[in-house]
Every structure is written in structure tokens, then in C-alpha cells.
Image (tube, rainbow, N blue to C red; front, side):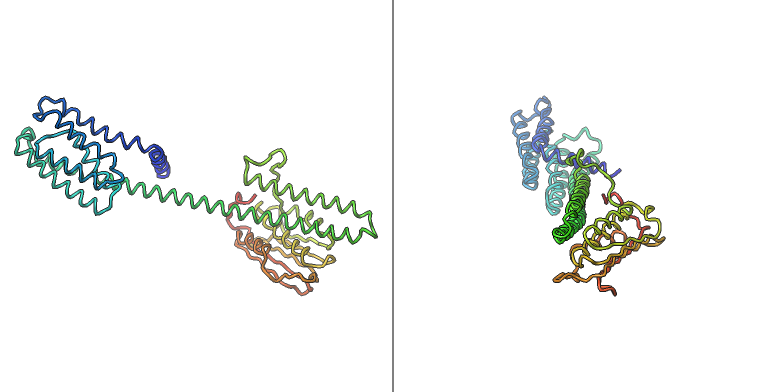
Length: 401
């Protein structure tokens, strides 16, 4: 209920900021209209031109009431004192209420205290002057009228202060909304970067492995060249399709729908195909699964797939082409366990001890499910990556493509 009200107030504030001259000129014009009856009232003893001068002096300074609230209040107070001295009442005297409101809205707290105090004293003086002059003889309780006038002026000051507080709240909410949007955009950029890293890193590693293998076999087994090129083409098309799906999620309106159908993202059922591409690049790879992987949520299946993909990518980059890789995925009641181990040995000059972008990405994916990832040398002379994810963790699946 509060949010729609704040949004409506924010819309009004935006419209006011877009056309400030409307309110800036409308308020003095309204005060001038209130002064017209005093000019045409034949019961007023003062000449008409005095009323016109007073009305002008009251209303024109209001054009600067926002930029110079204290100065405008002081000027209207002086004009009001002059009218009291002349024993002349003009309806444009309502400009004092507008000036006091402006002090509450745009002035400092000290200026507001001074303005309210001066207004109260002036109202007391006004009641005394008009009472002694006989112009309040029709009022049975002039002291009550004076108190009501003082309460009304205090209310105008309070309204100005409340308007300032509302604007402060609206500005704070808008700032928080903008910050949340920036954080969401940053998280989305990080997610897209992580996805693109996994997709491109794995595909390029497979293509490089296939190209190196084809070059080595070009002289002895040239018939393998066509098969290798076919696998390279399939790998490239698969990566291109995943990238298009990812970009379609990021920018639905700008994505070429005809060329990028929104097919499901990879999951547990695609692990076999993932290992087939790895085998084509040289290493032997085995997959062993336990539990109902298909029963896992789509987001968790994608996290498992990407962790296995990145671990295999590291194997293709750093291990010898004839390495042996074993992938084990266990879906238990309390956790999903992922283990990817190769037999090495590491390629010359390849460093697997540093926490690169791939390991950071795997840990980020595991952290989304309150899990963890460890990586290091194993007893078989190669490298092992192990991850543990919690399938029961409440997680916004719509954050994952």
C-alpha cells in the first residue's frame, strides 16, 4: 500500500521537476486572485492603488520562494507589518502562509524556528491592532480567532517540513532502487561472463585438442581429417547455440529469435555428450552417476554441468593428451557430489596450482547452493576437482538461464 503512494508521489515530483514554472507562477497568481476582492470591496477605506501595491508586494517575491525562502519570508513579513501600520487588510496577505511553508520546505531548521516565532508574534500584534481599531468588533471571541490563525500558520510550517521529509524519503527510495538495479545488472554481467567463460573455454580447448591431434595424424592417417573437422564443426555449433541462448535471455527484445531458439540449458542428461567431445580431443573419459540426477532442479543441474565442463577444460589445457579422466556425480538426499580426476601428467610449462578464473567460477557456482569446491593433485599423478552442493537450498532458479 505504501509503495504505490510513494511511486505516485515520485511521479508528481518528477512532473514538477520537468515543468517547475507551472507551480512557480501558479501560486503567486492564486494569491493575487485572493487580493482582488479587497480592491473591489467598497467597504475598504484605503484607495485602490494601495491595495494594488500591497498585492504586488505580497505576490511577486513568491517567484523566488524556493531559492531564497528566508529572504522572501522576511520581505512578506515586512509588507504585512506595513499593512498593519496602515490598518489595511488585503487578501493577498495569504502570501505569508506560502512564504512560511517555503521556509519549512526549503530553509534550514534555524530559519524555520525564527520564521514561526516571528509569525506568532506578528499574529498577536495583528489581533491587537485590528481589535483596538474596531475592525474585529464582529468577532465575539477575538482571542480564539487569533489562536486559530496561529495554529493555521503553524500548520503551514509543518506542511512544509513534512514535504521536505517526504521528498527525502522518496529520494532515498529512488536511490536504493537505482542501487538495487545496478547491483542486479552487475550480478547479471558476472553471470553472463561466467557462462561465456565456461562455454568458450571448453569449446576452444576441445577444438585445440582436436586440431593438434589431426595435425599429428595428418601424415599417417589422413582419413581422420574429415572426421576431426566434423567434430570441430559440431563443437563450434553447440557453443554458438549456447551463446545465442544466453544472449537471448539477457536481451530478449534484441535477440534474433529465428536464429536463437530458447532451448533448455545443459543439464545432467548432457554429460554423456560432454564427455564424447572430450574423448574426441584425445583423453579417455568415463562417467559414473549415482542417484536421480534428473530429479534435481534445472539450476542445480546446470551448476553440476558447468563444474564438470570447467574441470574437463582444465584437463584438456594442462594434462597430456593421453590422460585418463573419470567423472563421478552422486545425487544424495543431503548433497550432490561431483568428482573429476585425471591421471596427468601435466604438460610442460602448465601450472595448475593457481586459482584461475575457472576455479573461481566453479566456486561461485557451488556457493550459490551453499557448497564448496576443492582442487589439487591426486594420488594418480594428475589433478582432482571435487565439489559438494546442497540440493535442498532455497535458490532463485530464474537467475540461471
